Image 1: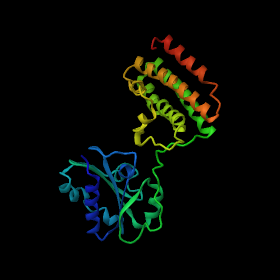
Image 2: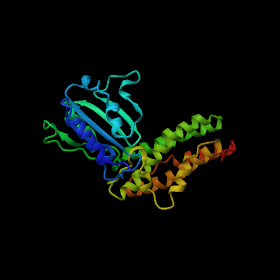
Image 3: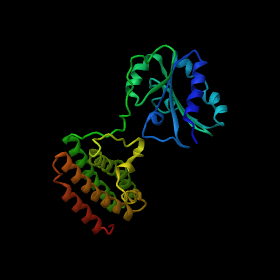
Image 4: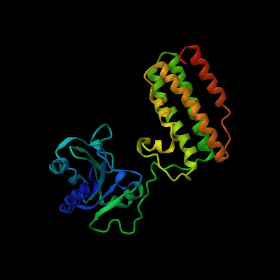
Length: 286
């Protein structure tokens, strides 16, 4: 089992012994009250340093490996790709045998800026009072919110419009094209509409979490298995079925959300659904 307090204490000890490190903090799931630590939890930490370029030369994977059962793999995303070196920080992503630690290095001058942008940032070491008087930022990155009438209408339009791209791909025999639009357009907008609908019941005081991992909390008993069937896009017929199920679920949650919020239903819904059904039937996909 992941021991978050043990990981923090190890990082605290490391930071206390290094005069370059002036403050240290954690964020992410460790400070999220909705999250329950488990074997796959990671520790999102940040060291605020005097000299970022000098701190980047420290081999943190080698320093931490003996304390966490050895290093499996690490990645430095800020040193990769065409924009390497353009970020105001440097990050070590480290998977050890016993835990994962994502360690970000930032210059001390960025403490206030980072505190304002990083959800749940919680200092556990502050040698110079960098965080004195600063209010922590809540876990708002994935929090739900009451949609404006424009946001509601945009969600409806995007899902209905891109549903036709899925149909086009399927009818042309271009499964990859259809699957891409399901994963990147239709399903995200369906999740968005579910959040508009079910979030209303708690005054939007809930979160979807990273990667929508808390979405099941918004679903009623018995709904999850049907929802999971949306992810079967392995063939033309299953993709067509997932699209039509998505449209059916969208209609249900859109109708419910519109009633709760007092917003009008999209007039295109019937036309788009009928067109999708007709074309998929003609091409013997549904």
